[in-house]
Amino acid sequence: MKLSTKGRYGLRAMIDLAIHSKENQVSIKSISERQEISENYLERIIALLKKAGYVKSTRGAQGGYMLTKKPDQISVGNILRALEGDLNPVDCSLTNDDKVCSESSLCVTKFVWKRISDSINDVVDNISLQDLVNEQIEIDQSQLSR
Amino acid sequence: MKLSTKGRYGLRAMIDLAIHSKENQVSIKSISERQEISENYLERIIALLKKAGYVKSTRGAQGGYMLTKKPDQISVGNILRALEGDLNPVDCSLTNDDKVCSESSLCVTKFVWKRISDSINDVVDNISLQDLVNEQIEIDQSQLSR
DNA sequence: TCATATCCGAGTCATTTAGTAGGAATTATG
DNA sequence: CATAATTCCTACTAAATGACTCGGATATGA
Image (cartoon, rainbow over all chains, first blue to last red; front, side, top):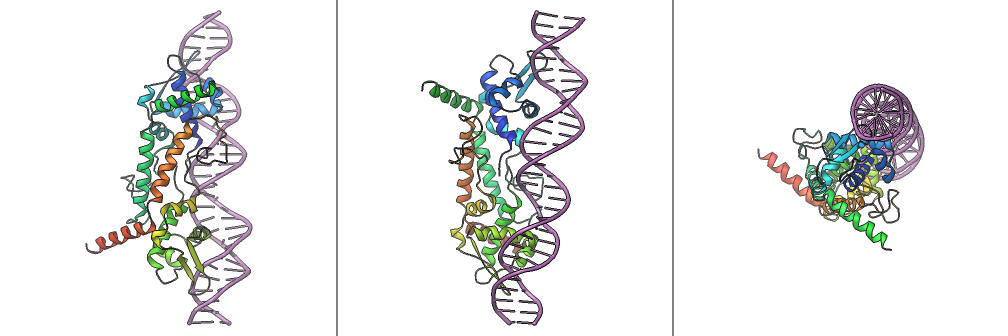
């Protein structure tokens, strides 16, 4: 029941992009340095976010990445689902209509799984990238004034 | 971000035990038949639940397992945490005080992980084994009357 | 005493995770 | 136009985890 590094690194990368790609392209290299994530691996992660439509790229010198939308239009849920797949704790008919649960068809546990996934999705869909950027800026400032 | 079979099978086993161990000992074999889970594997899972104190055993002929408490005194959260470990999506200083997060120490993502784990724990701690037993009985009866 | 159970350590196999490596394609800039 | 900077893409690998299986030791009611 853990998120993989994709989700963790990817969310940090998106926060980094939100802060640094206001007008400039941001290169993998610079994100990788700030966030201490390997360039090669970060590249793969950002490829997923690009495929999902939250990031656009420009190739060649001075190229890099930018967000496709404003940070308040991208939720943490959008990002995590792009990187981790659905956030359901179990693949089961209630949460995933077109797949019949192979386990005992009248199994009450599915009600539990449904409530868990609803609550997770509710949390992550109600936090925007902008919210995190704001919190980050606040933290950075309170660190500065020490 | 998935539960393992331990959590899924284990919860079903506990519901089965709650329904069938009112007075009798319930053997692995009988649970395994009703729930269609391999005996060997189920044994390992129930061992975890025993270690966590939710199940007691009697060895030898006519032996088997029983719950240690009434089903309304055991929450789904108790069961899942016994089988899966903590239900936090990330091991991080906010959710796990004695371990410092190796990733950027002032990382705002930890607020996200905290909110996710709070919401998961809130859901599972507010469903008791008895609740599931009740739902199961209801389903079984409505199937019967068809 | 024997059939029925739990207990328990070890082993296996497949999948997933978490990367690395290296080169092709693209493009701004001097 | 050459070059350095950059994304893009495929293939590979090592380690960890998940999902079991096997076989025998131990306990016990009938």
